[in-house]
Image (cartoon, rainbow, N blue to C red; front, side, top):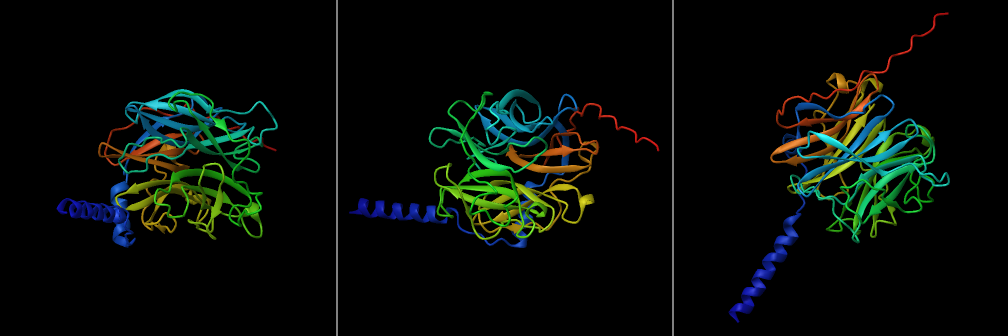
Length: 376
């Protein structure tokens, strides 16, 4: 009998522990400050990935770890549109290009023929954790935005899903679902995403807070009166199979009513969820683009940080924009990857850190010469 009661007691204790593991924490000003102190990166290491010439631009890093090495998916824009590439590193600072994972289509009828901007899905979100790219149905998944128009984020962009059963550390073409999973033309499109759609980030909802297995955070432009001139906001969609998605909620999660709020990336820091994202042009063009964060205890309702930017323009290589976060903590150091854009509109990938690691020796190639205006 004693053994029976002991088993019951241990089971009850385990159930209680599981139930309180993700106990909701009130998001107070002191909690926000605590998070800021944990994630801030005051030291700019500098550029870690740059184009070899001025005919293309780098953008949107996503970083994961496998077999003791670090890998990065990132975007290349070459004038036609976005393709998704892969790089590797031993130390998070020195990177080597490996090759493409999503390329332009040869078939002009593909809905995403000229744009394939991919982001890793279902990563271990634990702050300071493994940063492993996890599988679903024995596949590695990427969400991406795509379109058939040529140019920088041109035309109507929609969201698609891609996957592979092969090792994600080797450059190869991911397979793509035939049709997009969310578009601005959907019958259930909302006022905030009825113009065009951009970056998307997919996580597991292990506790089914939303009642679903997966959550997609995405940013999109829209407006109830003039969609094309609307602001860009962050919203969410949900799925149970990574293939069929539906919008969740009746309002955006992050909305500054002007400019851009975009590129959400989620981490679990202790008992709170942190969304890294970027803002731009809230008070005008001169404000530039900068990285911010918000905090939640339920993945749905977010409290916006009101203090200093996590990363903003301050150096010659990022004096136009410093934006689009991907943040990891490894061996006690926070590495904040971001897209650095200078006033010559050269675009590469830079890092800011929580510890002074010195300065990168990498620089952009000589900027393109400006054409002199002809005098009348």
